[in-house]
Amino acid sequence: MTTVDLPLLPLGRGVDRASERGVDCPGDLPAASDPDLVARARAAKDALGERVFVLGHHYQRDEVIQFADVTGDSFKLARDAAARPDAEFVVFCGVHFMAESADILTGPDQQVILPDLAAGCSMADMARLFQVEKAWAALAEAGLQDVVVPVTYMNSSADIKAFCGRNGGAVCTSSNAEVALEWAFEQKGPDTKVLFLPDQHLGRNTAVLQLGYSLEDCVVWNPLLPGGGLTVEELQNARMILWKGHCSVHGRFSPDVVDELRAATPEINILVHPECQHEVVLKADYVGSTEFIINTIEAAEPGSSWAIGTELNLVQRLATAHPDKRIVFLDRDVCYCSTMNRIDLPHLVWALESLVDGIVVNRIEVDPDTEREALVALQRMLDLPGKTARD
Ligand code: 13P
Ligand code: SF4
Image 1: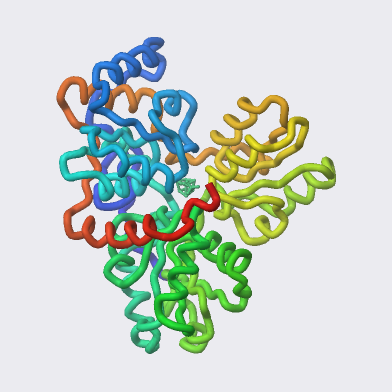
Image 2: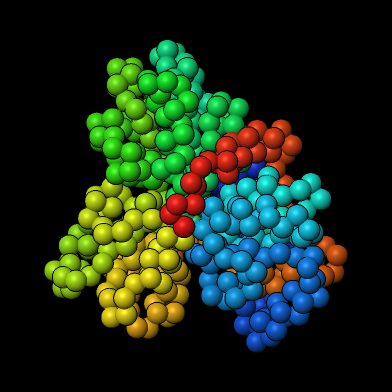
């Protein structure tokens, strides 16, 4: 069996700042049982005033999201971060790759803070730069590199975005994957192929269901196998080369549960995120980013029934906000994103109070070379036409 050199970081010991992993908190966290946490967060935020801008991804806990100046999916938050050049501190309540993107899109004098460095993303960790460079070299050896455009999902580390930037590719999010792929397929003539990183499901769902490619047009590159586990002929015949990565939360939803819910409630609407497996998306009524999911529920008829396949914090918040609609989670078990959930009130209070004391903790800073190349790929995404069609 092939192994990968991922450093093992036992909980509470060690930090790997160059990756999506980090588990230590270098300061004194307030106790989670402190009854004054809400008041402390509010006081610290008030004291900082316009100097601080707090971004909250839709998968964040309620206790954190209440302090967000703006909420959004990863695309909206990237734009929001870029639109506040006056904020000295951007506190990102989300995960590491989002904070990196915010750092790339904000000015050199703005400091981006991730309240807990352990808020990584298992999907982003599935594509490491050395693995992607190996795949790229294999494509060159197969004589195909000149017709391949790399596109990475926002859910990837900054060095993967930089790889795409320097190799003629772009970033996309679940809000604009369709337009980004349309753009990519126009870049190298009629034989263009796309190397899609790191979420095979978003890549497959977009290529097949939105762009009209077939499942046979898609192959999966497994970074743990020599040559990605593919023959040169398979690579030659493919249009979409999908990286073998997935989201551990959205990958859990299964077509069986969709069938069970439809049998029990025939009028139920199934609404899922495109990070779900293709078999689930095929059975769904509506598919889209978290922003699209929220807009769909807001526009839904009172009395309508919905099963939602996305992160549980968001589904619970939607159910609470819409008591006139029947909203259930599309899984038998509870499943929060464990890394999104690392940002809790004690970490937020610690980060904000430290800023009040003049100490910047957990700053996320992308090195200048990576930043320059990643910005090229991010800017290509921000320049896409009609990019907000789904939100
Ligand atoms: P979006 O925010 O693009 O919908 O992505 C979902 C997700 O998994 C974020 O980590
Ligand atoms: Fe990563 Fe999935 Fe969690 Fe999003 S929900 S941060 S893709 S593991």
